[in-house]
Image 1 (tube, rainbow, N blue to C red):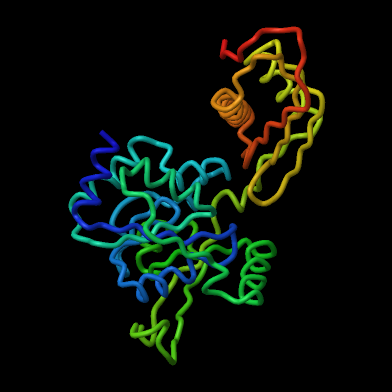
Image 2 (image 1 turned 45 degrees about the vertical axis):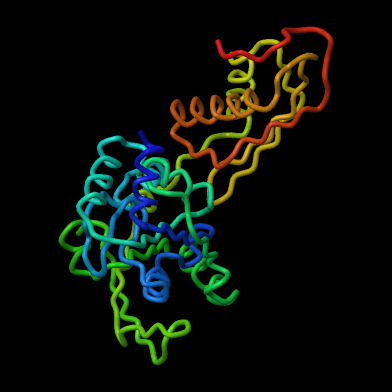
Amino acid sequence: MRFLNSIIWFLRGVRVYALVGSSGTGKSFRAKLVAQKYGIDLIIDDGLLIRGDQLIAGKSAKKEATYLGAVKAALFHDKAHRDEIAKALQKEKFRKILIIGTSEKMVSRICERLQLPQPFKVIKIEDIATKEEIEKALQSRQVEGKHVIPIPALEIKRNYPSIFYDSVRVFLKKSFGAGASLPKIYEKSVVRPEYAKRGRVSISEAALSQMVVHCVDEYDSSLRVKRLAIRDDTQGYRITVVLEVPYGTRLASNAHALQEYIVDNIERFTGILVAEVNIVIDRFTKNGKKNMSRK
């Protein structure tokens, strides 16, 4: 059904554009610049569907109480949320839509969940912002916890008064890109997310290591964890698991399934965000089961 819907959008001539970059690099701030340059009708940003200065549908990830909740909202993890956006898309007349995400993988997942075609064009934040501009945006995010939503203050005050902080009016003296003239003044909203006020959920490295080892053993007791490397950054925890694997193990699809099993269990039981899990096969052993299988 999802594949069929994607084909229908494609046949209707709908093209998806992606704007990607790490958190806090100024993607939302420049979203309307990109939309104006490419003649894009709709924007999807952090759980919201936006047309021009109007909020069409969705719920803002910035209103979530936890960082994990915000990520799930941005990815339309909740069925009711993604159904609301999908129904709104069916009613809207558009040919181009811009999806904002921290990576191409994130945008691809959003397309799948909203049954949209995969991106026709990917624009990286480094293509439209200077290194100095990106660093300034990152500093504002890290020090002040400020986020931008590309719609006017009136819309945010009406729908999310508790997170509204300030508004920004941008004045442009010249066009952005060949043949694309922008309005002289347009407004964006600056917000302080609920999860930024409360802080991110964290966990000790020792406790997280024990959980990873338990997940691997529960998934397949023939696998042996030799080493673990854990790193925490603004995107979440990044975990590298070095394994000993029995001969005859089917690696490709099952390694991916093990990654998902670890991520799903840790996020569900701890509330922390896992940005990635890397599986490294250090060596093969003669003992143990021949195939990885979920219990």
